[in-house]
Amino acid sequence: MLKIYNTLARDKQTFKPIIAGKVSMYVCGMTVYDFCHLGHARVMVVFDMVSRWLRASGYQVTYVRNITDIDDKIIKRAQENNETITQLTQRFIDAMNEDASELGVIRPDIEPKATEFVDSMIQMISTLITKGFAYVAANGDVFYSVNQFKGYGKLSGKSLEDLRAGERVEVDTHKKDPMDFVLWKAAKPSEPSWDSPFGGPNGGKGRPGWHIECSAMSSHYLGKHFDIHGGGQDLQFPHHENEIAQSEAAHGKACEVEATHGDIPHSHDGKPCQMVNYWMHNGFVRVDNEKMSKSLGNFFTIRTVLAQYDAEVVRFFILRAHYRSPLNYSDKHLDDAKLALTRLYTALRGYEIIDAHVDWQHPQAIRFKAAMDDDFNTPEAMAVLFDLTNEVNKTKAIDTASLLKNLAGILGLLQQDANDFLQGSLNDKLPNLVTEDYIVLQISQRNEAKKNKKYAEADQIRKELAEAGILLEDTPQGTIWRKA
Image (cartoon, rainbow, N blue to C red):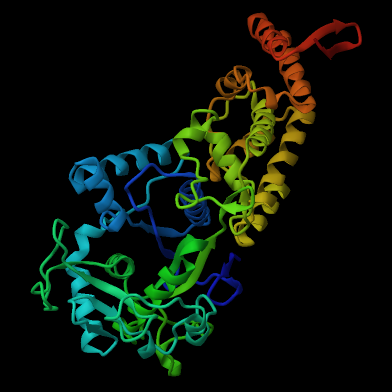
């Protein structure tokens, strides 16, 4: 049975969907004011992998990933560019979708934009005010009162006392408590705004805060209680913590009938029903042991990386690490990923595989399933792929090659024609790629090309290695190499 590490429980838990056979999953998406970087790529690829495995396991999945198309950064960038917010956001939504498609990411079932749900957010904020969980400040902003929600901090493990102890002097004197967070921002000159019933100096005109959008959109599409909520580790606090506070305060015990599992708190046992059963967070992408981010200036856009590496190499690089582990970016790690993926493709060379059927009784398929059911353990699943590669190289059995391709396909890998990928590999002239393992692999490919009377291809391999400073010599004992 599938087990998922639940951030809320701080443990792996057996996955039990609210409705048998169906999975509802919401993932926090991108704020679209610039090109996506590798940190965004990891979120896209990781939860694409999760969705793929859930579907391969027989679940009917509803996957929602939102788009934040209104916030301070977006407004500032549009003003700097002298363009409308819609022009800016649509341009980067299109770019995001292009990048995701390159990485083999299947589009989520639903991709709502924040600006399409402002009315829903206003309704939820009004409910929170009525219930005493929120208040309208003198300046027209609406704040959530964290003191009123008893469970605040349960996702992050932070207590209000600890948070206050580490809090800087609060600049916004309109808050009742420094930890209160904004639900609605009163209108400012030259900024977009919507009418609201909240009053204040601007007659209620304003725009929603960031946290409220996900609560409104997730409940609209998935209900007040759903299975999985995902996102990057950096969103665990405060964003996801605030989502819980907003949603559970607004909805109360609304999922009383839906919750049926004794291991999930629900209103039948006197506890308030929780918003989400399983919280998933992927680890950071790091550069020189620092989190990759725009604020630190150490980020690499997906487009920059794809200009240097095949998109499937980048996907392989992301999935080679467990989704909860840090992912260390470097050219060397991507070069290693390219070599490893090239090894998989080399094993498939010469096979025409059309049938996507997986024999789940095969010992290696059983291993693969066990790995994926263990909190989506892609490193172990990939170990299965390399063991299958060894079997293909030894036995030349098409059934084994088919299993290799089809299991990899569940991860979104080995989706290209093997010859096309390998030809692209030959054209890679990066000097740091020319390792001993790479040279041996290229010699093997050259021998295979000669065996199949593809002499032009064999000559191209020799030429590429010569340009990289590696000379080949054919002897009766085989091909040997030396540095020029």
